[in-house]
Length: 315
Length: 185
Image (cartoon, rainbow over all chains, first blue to last red; front, side):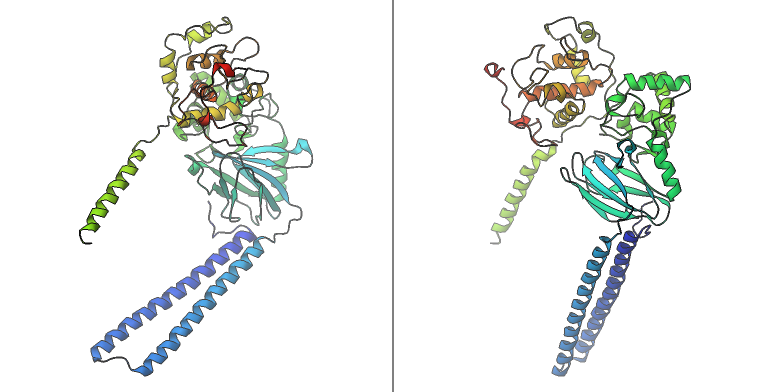
């Protein structure tokens, strides 16, 4: 779930604190203003009933009261300003030691995550899934492929826009393990609503194992159906856009499918990743996500089943 | 004043209505293609004829079934995207040509009708144009064909793309006049 008030890291906690402070302050001011309004109504009603103008002496008291209220408002507003400046400063001061570097590229309508490493053969790419270690800062560099998108994981940090032709950076840390949802927060076209990604915060050893696994090439299919599926994948249109490491499929327009079966969702949060949903997705993505850039493939049922069998081996 | 105000309101209202009229037509986007049976004609003459010949029978109907519509901005924009994604640029550049012939001039070795361009993409041509049948889905090939025609100004300019996702390399497609034979390289 994504919930900005359920902070999983120091920065979301700062933002949530600022939100609560603003909320309670505004509630108090609202109650105060409404109380004053009710009192004024009641008072004017009583004065009118007594049939006379308010004495000049009361006028002076009123002036002092209004002056105090104005002063109090200014103090509260400046206080809010100060709190938000302090929050902003705290957000920018995340210790960057031992940070995980991830490059995120937003496409219409999916997310590409490239895990950086000084060693070129340790760099790997995944899609619509951001796996991060608990307790270590994560520095995400952001880039947009086509139009403006926005990166937002409410449980971890605020939003950051991705603007074509410009690289921006966002840094955050998760302090407890959990599954969160990140979303595109800037309208980017017909399928903006289905442009989500799973954020999984793992304990350090689990994360290290995951990274090790992601770096490996796709396993060789064993069953006959899966082998036929791979043949279809490599000779048909799949490999024009998709890559599977360890095979000749190196397309870069769609998500890297090397460890596709280990992901929770298909189509950037459109449907859960089950074999049935996958078959529907391959056959006609336009039914599940109209406007998506993956075309429909009306394959013979046996071929479709073989392709699904192959993709399910990509754990 | 009491008389002028309602009349002003009526005029303003009418003007607003008239200016809202163009909004009534919303461009259609077809997301659910009709499955099309494999095309016998283009397969038969693939790689055999050096001249384009007359467009095969039924090619117009095929184009309609495949979603070919060169007056539709969405179709052209998708075609432009696929043109880049499927590496047409590798040989034809942004239309100026490279190891493949230029596409923004008036020279058409294998014909310029949508059916001809489609056949060229799907079945390839001698001397290097690969066949993309079975790789590029048919409706995408029709979209690419529409975009290829826009490169030399053969499509209505209110539908042709007017901006690039990347840095602009050439004048936008919607500003191009139809290419003239004397411009041929």
